[in-house]
Amino acid sequence: MRANTWAGRNKVEVRDVPDPAILNSRDAIVRITSTAVCGSDLHLVDGYVPTMRDGDVLGHEFMGEVVEVGPGVDPGRLRAGDRVVVPFPIACGACAACAAELYSCCENSNPNAGMAEKMFGHPLAGIFGYSHLTGGFAGGQAQYARVPFADVGPMKIESDLTDEQVLFLSDILPTGYMGAEMCDIQPGDVVAVWGAGPVGQLAMDCARLLGAARVIGIDKEPYRLRMAEEAGHTVVDFEDTDVRSRLLELTGGRGPDKCIDAVGLEADHGSAHISAYDRVKQAVRSETDRPHALRQAIMSCRSGGVVSVIGVYGGMIDKFPAGAWMNRGLTLRTGQCHVQRYMGPLLERIERGELDPARVITHTLPLEEAAHGFEIFKNKQDGCEKVVLKP
Image (cartoon, rainbow, N blue to C red):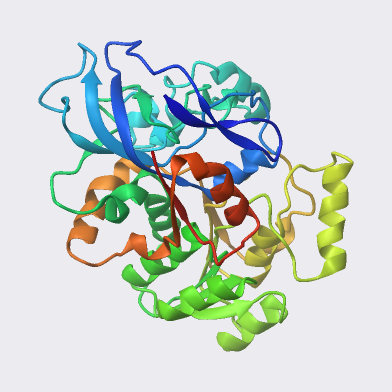
């Protein structure tokens, strides 16, 4: 089969790779009909996530048709011919974390859990197409994918909704929703979202859906800011103004009630000298991540507010504003999304017309053009907000 593979830092390549096969009784094989390029994929391509190997199949946002199931999969739950969306975290459904609906913390799905524990102090769940640190599972930017624990993860789509309407139930819509949910939004709240990429856009939509009186999106790319404005959100260009000062102006001097970091470890900063500081720190290996957005969110949030972190961080950061966090009584909440928890309720919201995740799609390309999709997405060319690939 054909699949998009990691071919070294800053390089992906569509190659012929072996077809997946049933390896465990609870596996399924899915023929991919739609898959997508995620901002988290760029961390792999940019070299920030270790343990990638030449030829690893990328992609953790995908859906398609079940073509084969293992003998341990209950046919009442899943069978050949079902149309499914596959969540990016692989979860066993039986461990203590899964019982608590903390699916991205599954204790049984990552065969390389010891490797992750050495880095993070605790095992990580398996993730499709996201390095050997998270299990070395082949991803979904391919014609077919093996899906472990298929009786727990994939969600059947039994309506006539298009792939584009439901594909992002695999990751970015639940991630944006969880980011807003962790804010505990109350009537009248002002919510600021750092990052107007696909996750940030959907976090803004979900914050409004959960009752925010005003949502402010922060970015520097004109097309992203325009997209947020067209969705009814206020925008701030962080290259054109001091973010904290502008947020204070917009909130009567208090700061936003709730703040969402939808950027993560590759953040930019409007000030050249501050941006250079973190890039130098990375170069000399005294930090691995650039936490500009996280720092700004903590410094900008009103006293007693909530900072929700859904942007991916992978290692160590410098100059974390612990004093502001502690002395102003801020609540910090974070985590990889527990996608399985949210898929059903969010599907219902899509069916009722309350959410339109397809609005972030700007480019649809054949799988063979995956390298081009990565290039325009990474370099923010041609107004590229979200790329969907068709195998």
